[in-house]
Each structure stands twice: as C-alpha cells, then as structure tokens.
Image (cartoon, rainbow, N blue to C red):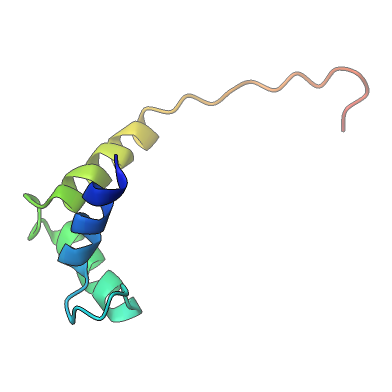
Length: 69
C-alpha cells in the first residue's frame, strides 16, 4: 500500500478532520467494523484481510536443541 492510499484511508477515519485519528474515532471505527456497518470501506476490507491471514497462521515448532530452556 502506498502512502497516498494510506492517507486517504486515514482521512475516512478522521471524523473531525483534525489530521489525527483520536481514540474515540478509532473505537467508533472498530465498533462499526465489528458489527459490519462499514464492511465496504477500504479500511474494513484491509482489516478483514489481515484478520483472515491471522486465522491461517500455523504455529512454528520450536526445537529445544543446544541447551535451550
């Protein structure tokens, strides 16, 4: 994702247009994403994709060789 795209997405979240995503704006967005009210926004799509990628993670086995604890 390029910087311009990221800036556009953050502008969608910055409801009072002060150039910062404040806590209440972030929490409002997270609530909307969780309930599906912003499913069409680019940020919601990116977050859903990231969540799906996390769900597909496979634990990496750890060898405890060389005297590891």
